[in-house]
Image (cartoon, rainbow, N blue to C red; front, side, top):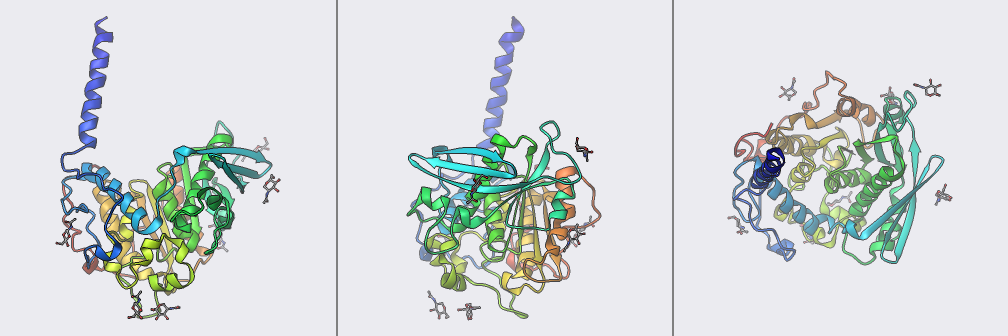
Length: 399
Ligand SMILES: *[C@@H]1O[C@H](CO)[C@@H](O)[C@H](O)[C@H]1NC(C)=O
Ligand SMILES: *[C@@H]1O[C@H](CO)[C@@H](O)[C@H](O)[C@H]1NC(C)=O
Ligand SMILES: *[C@@H]1O[C@H](CO)[C@@H](O)[C@H](O)[C@H]1NC(C)=O
Ligand SMILES: *[C@@H]1O[C@H](CO)[C@@H](O)[C@H](O)[C@H]1NC(C)=O
Ligand SMILES: *[C@@H]1O[C@H](CO)[C@@H](O)[C@H](O)[C@H]1NC(C)=O
Ligand SMILES: *[C@@H]1O[C@H](CO)[C@@H](O)[C@H](O)[C@H]1NC(C)=O
Ligand SMILES: *[C@@H]1O[C@H](CO)[C@@H](O)[C@H](O)[C@H]1NC(C)=O
């Protein structure tokens, strides 16, 4: 009798304690959606401090990260991605026909579908009892890196989800026509709906080991997919550049030009919402930078690939600025080994990129040890001007 009386009490105490930890006193009020116009935001010369809230209050410890993360999610949607759809209104129905996975998404009376190709690993038999990790891929990769290593692929064509065009087309716009959402977000949503479908009808894929990958504009989408879906355990943006891993604030153009917002405004303004375009010539007013997009994935794993002669994507900025700044947040959260950069001496979306990230992926999915140091940014060096706050991480590490 006594046992049964005490148990609920202990349970209640545990909940209360967990509640206190999750809602620290320093948490500022939730941001509303009526935020300042881009041109009314304060100018921030260096990368925005991860440990300062939007209202300028300081975080006190890693326990405050949940609050900071929540406001950052609002900021990146307000000023860049557009607001990700409310998936609680969606119904996802999946079916399989051979190697094809058909994903049907409905919202109210609207509905659309797209196809995904499933590829099984070549060196193991994927079964319900021994499920394999899966990487959801926007387009083709070096299959050997994945299928030859016990990892399945689920490959789709991003333009089936949303046209790479100012003119809306594809499943996403069938459902969300007229909304001020970027196509990068639409593509990210595609990755996420494929995972819904896999969970429904592909039991031989392991829901606890799920990667997303894409190169160039699809790499920007892979990063967004990792940000918006906590079920993704490994995010792999390749040659992603601006609106992906490249910083808005710091460019290194001695050897070749880096892409700027003004360039994107010319040929693909639809990749983001309309607010982002208002930061042309004012990128110092963006209340986040790419290091915080990366930090939104933490403490889940992320590895990115970049080529030293792929100047348009600002590879120097991705390593010297974004990597070291976002790693500071990972370190602080006790997740140092969950972030990596893989630098290679070649160009945009070089096929070698997949081999470049392979050891990190195998460590993440199978615990396979590697001698490779994925924190090594050589041939580059740190760029401390970008992160004057780096040594002021508040409180103790959770790790
Ligand atoms: C935070 O501080 C900056 C610099 O002093 C200022 O420009 C900005 O308005 C402050 N933000 C808020 C929300 O008070
Ligand atoms: C999608 O896959 C289904 C089932 O295999 C097939 O009938 C259909 O033609 C495919 N659609 C497209 C656009 O390829
Ligand atoms: C996979 O299953 C097939 C058929 O049962 C079998 O012949 C093959 O040896 C298995 N492969 C591995 C790697 O276990
Ligand atoms: C990118 O924009 C800059 C600034 O307006 C311009 O000088 C440059 O020519 C553009 N680059 C390309 C490749 O369009
Ligand atoms: C941005 O700056 C460039 C170069 O000074 C100028 O030509 C262009 O008109 C500016 N664009 C906007 C939208 O202010
Ligand atoms: C594909 O990946 C395998 C395994 O990493 C590698 O040995 C091979 O060289 C790669 N192929 C290309 C064209 O990069
Ligand atoms: C990996 O490289 C970084 C940067 O050069 C260095 O600080 C770190 O000590 C290295 N880690 C190991 C395990 O060698």
